[in-house]
Image 1 (cartoon, rainbow, N blue to C red):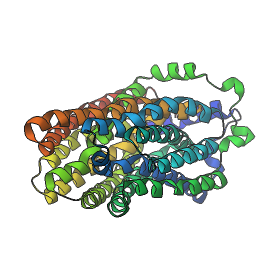
Image 2 (cartoon, one colour; image 1 turned 90 degrees about the horizontal axis):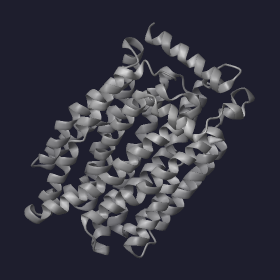
Image 3 (cartoon, rainbow, N blue to C red; image 1 turned 180 degrees about the vertical axis):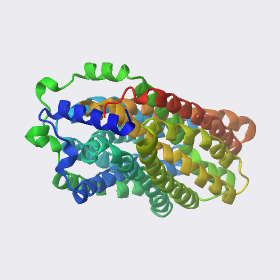
Image 4 (tube, rainbow, N blue to C red; image 1 turned 90 degrees about the vertical axis):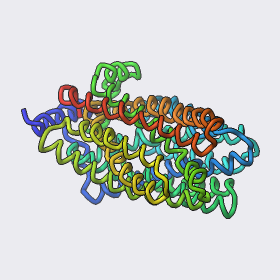
Length: 444
């Protein structure tokens, strides 16, 4: 059986199970419609990552005002956000798998936008930490139902590219957070930065409500009550899928670098290369975003092409290979003596680093099944965020503080970042292992 034949067979079986009457949800929409919905979700994801990552460029001014250590800032940027983001993601995803996903997204967007704006009103470190917990709680309701909708809007052979476009919003949000946040913080203070990026999300929530379509409102695609899975049944089904478990492990180690090490990149440039907050945020944001756009689009296109022509396991092989190759480049960036050399290496590393992301989630959607899509994404993000985002920044901060005593704050942070980059090796290894099981676990 060819990969295309197995893909079509799994798709038909899956659609019948989900819809009862047969047919495919993606046949409901024209090309312009599905791309319009994708761009709305792109804006949602952009808002998500702006509000999540703006604190990256505000680390130094917040640290100076409240007089806290790198370890405490790691707690603020990592665990304070990830605690509720990870734990609320699964119950919210269960709601999304059973109900109207666009309503879940609109409510979540409203919550995190308000909490981001409130972050700018914090008068103490712990008030700010509490606000960040609220941001994490709101953002728990965004990515899983959004990815679930994308999988219903686009055919399986188009998903990597659709997810690639969607995930470019992560870099768009990251860059906006760095550039806009750095500019506002330098001219108006870090509190103003939180308020300015938080409030537009309220208008975006209205756009979600009035523009997006929920396929399940069509009677033929409504999931009957008897076909709905309990949370426990969904967890058991996913836990018995070897490729799904391996993809989660790959995501955990990927996030250790993406949200553990790289959250300190702007601080590293300020300490080691003597740049201001706006210079470091602008330079790193611009270069990393260019690499992310190139890598995401190239990785997604290559994944769809190789999966169709050479077999579905390439959805896991592409990220496995790219993550392993990116390790020496990312490490060399933190060893570079000049800003130009560092930015050149960051560009190359980000191309490979970003190429992995749409493929990893495209592989996940191939093996999770339609009736538990949001739950599958939420479970993956639970572990990835709890261990990657939740522990990555604190570990980096603790290592930085530990080495700073002997080598100074700049070199201490350099050694911490180099150690954290090693996590790219197991991330790639687990994706290569997932490729061996993917075709047997296929349930698109």
